[in-house]
Image 1 (tube, rainbow, N blue to C red):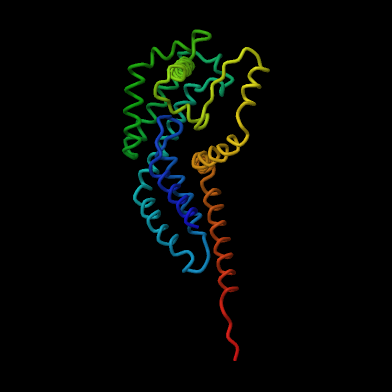
Image 2 (image 1 turned 60 degrees about the vertical axis):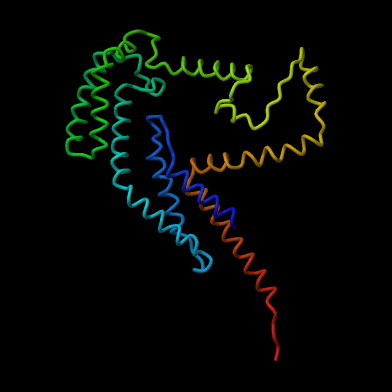
Length: 272
């Protein structure tokens, strides 16, 4: 039960501290939505007050955080929807728009100017987050817009440099692995342990792998699986926050039932 309570606290801390540099996956907005889903599940929890006292106190703090940040989250949601409109105007990413090869730079420029006028009108009477978005988009469009438009007229010219950055990142990680320098974040996806073998054939590689004692493998394999549990929990939480918290509360309720039955069996009876 203590473990379940700790996991729910981890889920709440993760919601209020989520960060992201990706423009279509804003950490603050996603974190607010995650915290809102957790609050809905906690409000639906039923049971004796003595058994749910901890969660009743916890939901008060969650509701306070939601009420304090709801106006900001609404403004962020509105700005995010406009960011989506801008991406659709630019046909980004190209694979999502079948007409990408048919549009011209002149057409994109006209559509963007119209969209920026609409955004400016709404930003003047909207939330300050929307005003900040308009200021940033208008500044960058005036500064880099003409250079961006070349990708619509030159076949094969990508609208971004993400593939080049991805290639550079893989080369950098590979260089760190073979040089023994400080590990990067990406290396953690492969687990806590890595073994490098040098073999001339698959048969020789298999022979090297078979030299690992089974007793040592069975000893360290559960430890590796246990070390991956926190990361797997956050992965499930980000994909389905409400369902993940609901499963934890269901487990909590089942533990409460087991403890109640155990206490009733051990309670002495007195006969007159």
